[in-house]
Image (cartoon, rainbow, N blue to C red; front, side, top):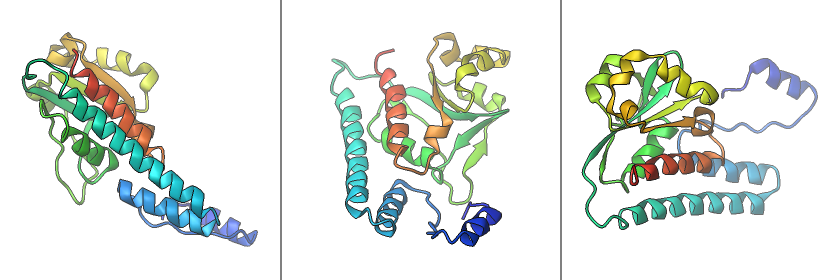
Amino acid sequence: PYSHPPVLEALRNHQIALYTIKHIDTVAQIQEALLKVGHASNHILEAQLLSIFMEACFLSIDNRLQALNECPSSPIPPRRLLYLYYHQHYMQPTTKCLTGQLMTRALQHCPHLICPIPQSKAEWRLSFDQEKILQSQPDYLIISTPYIDNSDLLLRQQYALHELKAFKSEKIFYIDESVQESPTQYIGLAYFDLFQALAATYCL
């Protein structure tokens, strides 16, 4: 449904077979789409294996997160975590988007982290200005941005955020937004990126 109509028309004019995939908004829908493409392209076995591999990746990461809870000799005190997108301003993911769903899944295995992921069936992201960030005073901050190479510099230029606990203790993690929002089999890599950021909260 996101394809550019003139491009589709050009493909039809060249008699190239098209297969339309509807909205892909969840991990389960990504797996369903893979299987449908496998059938349409006569690569059924490969699609089945890829879907199984995705499921195995997610279960493996779930297990790794669960295992981290068993490592500390004493309980970890509750910590505040904030996940934000950054372009020209900050936004917070909701449960409607893939990142919000991945964070909700991961946080089930991280009882020491308090991280708000708003429920929504309509909004993909919610605006989250600097005043709200300062009020929340997160112990850890995950920032998803397409400007991954310049992300640390961009944050340091926003002097108001220098008062954050996460900034002062350098507990800020940057992840690639293009991976987080990919409605493909690479969503497994997105979950692994989240795992790496969350795992760091056990040792800092």
